Length: 343
Figure: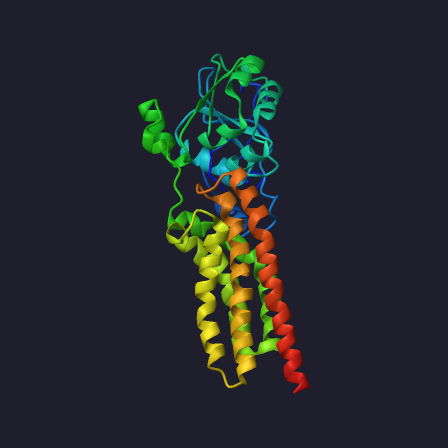
């Protein structure tokens, strides 16, 4: 199970004793300040692949041979979301080596997959630890796991739990997954949760773009550059459900056009000559939308709106258009500056 969004967790590990099951390290359900700080760093994209839990088998509380086995990724947010939701529960947690990637993304990449699951069951000697033969997996990991092959190769059957780790207590109480627990959402809070990483990743390019535009067109042009970036990073996920089209590229272009229009109007009524005014207006309309649209594509892997095949098709169809539009706009900006210097 796990948060869609791991630290070594040394503060939660304890020494095993002779009475403990073999190959099972200890874990607790307590989330410490160090864990929360790690979560913050992971959310803002700091040391992207450094938030790790050692793969293997962990015991939570005082599990017996009949205790359930939950499976998750070795990403701290996923692991911590699971263990904290199992407060007061005696259970085992089997952590797969997903290279520090969350369950959903790792399932798509194949690291949260059939082979890794089967091998991790064997390496942990799970058949010696528990008397039952059932593994409880996060629903978002289903795309990477072939349950029938896992059963054939390991002897363990696969059961899929809730989408969210926070629903696990109710899942345990009911003994089943409800339709509500199966539903994948992408609320405003969930959409904005992925924005800090994008802000961090594009902070330097945004600053560089703003500087170039300031030198080429002044303060307003610099603000336009920042606006195009921030529209793709913050405004786009906020307005995602209401933007037109099913394609993220078209949604991004539409938003980019809306953001560019005020700058284009301002340019048309500027104090330059009509060639400069029209030229700068055209530049804003050509260069700003593809920037916003390109950044919008980054959210395809975080949403329930798209599929892998759909994303690949979008990239093939719309990226060339983005390049052409942005290229023409930049060529126009250079020409306008050369014209101004010549005059």
